[in-house]
Image 1 (cartoon, rainbow, N blue to C red):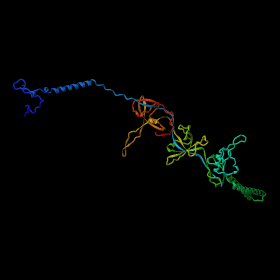
Image 2 (image 1 turned 120 degrees about the horizontal axis):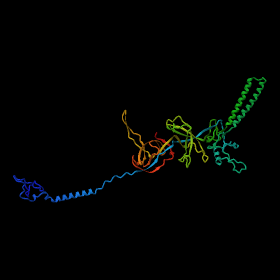
Image 3 (image 1 turned 60 degrees about the vertical axis):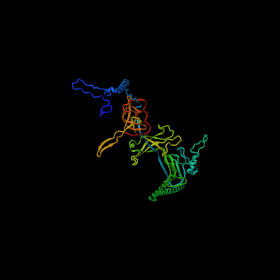
Image 4 (image 1 turned 90 degrees about the horizontal axis):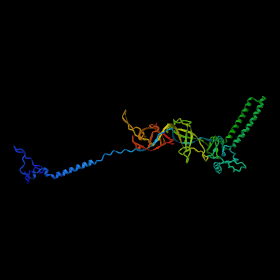
Length: 492
């Protein structure tokens, strides 16, 4: 089957004509007798396409050669700059106090409740004394109430001695005692009415005189042998009983004047002038504030570090105070006078009492008042050659879980975190694992892992890695003293 041109339909136009095999006995291939367009070679027929392809190949090769000739050399990676850090040269401190602060309550050293020993009506209070000199006698024995005493005290609180002719002001009018007044041992607190006691004393005294005369008469009769010996014994016994009754009345009469058994401050006067009191009724309460007790509850773990006779600091929260304590709190020293041997089963604490002198302030008042809240700084131990570093320089690192086998199977346990720091060794950051001891303010003691003269990185340490180069921008000096805040034990 042929098409319009006479070509075979299954022969592509772009293929060369098949070669003509030579006839038998001929020496070469035989050319066809006729040639037309279909007899041209493939290269002749596709000359234009071949030229385009060749030019494109030459252009691509030229571009490749040019790029190869102008290729830039490889740039080496830039060096990592060192990290800027601040360091502190580690120093060992000769002494560091491991302390704990606890709240304490001020209590009077002694509180005495004075009771009436004889019955009677309260006649008057004792006179206020500015010194320990004996009080003057009550003018006319006129009774005065606490309200009147307060009015008199407002008019004049001090007795000023007035020697005639010395030009001094007249003495302040006397006044009677009131609550809050300071008194001295042996000073009169109040007087009871003694009319009945005086009458009873006169009666007993008269009986004693009669019994004494009877005894003398019996003794004379006995000397002459007129009276029996038992009559003499009875007379002596009767005289002795009368004498004992007189001594009793005299003692009761003396006790009608109630005096202060100790010096201190009158805390309460619960009875008024004119009231009738019976023996045993409390008529006054006196608190000794020259020395006070500071009471606090100590945890059981700290109590074993304390014993009687130790001295500790008592801190007062006073406004604008510049003495005693670096935090602006005045400090007193107290001595442990009592440590309970039995702990509280609920709080696991033991009662601790410290006795401290109570100085007088500029206004004449005692520095420590009853039930005042203070802070007790107890020293548990003293660390020697201790290394203290800033707490912010420590980085906690969580360890991997501990896996172990027990009776029930495989058990995983969360390991306790480790504490690490970085030190500068010749410009290279090195990681150190440390063991910490006490926390004192914003510093912590290092038990193991650091030594003196180590250059501890305290700023920028969270931006470094082990083996990384560092550059010191500042070197801080170690603190000259430990922080004044209490130390809490957080390690061994």
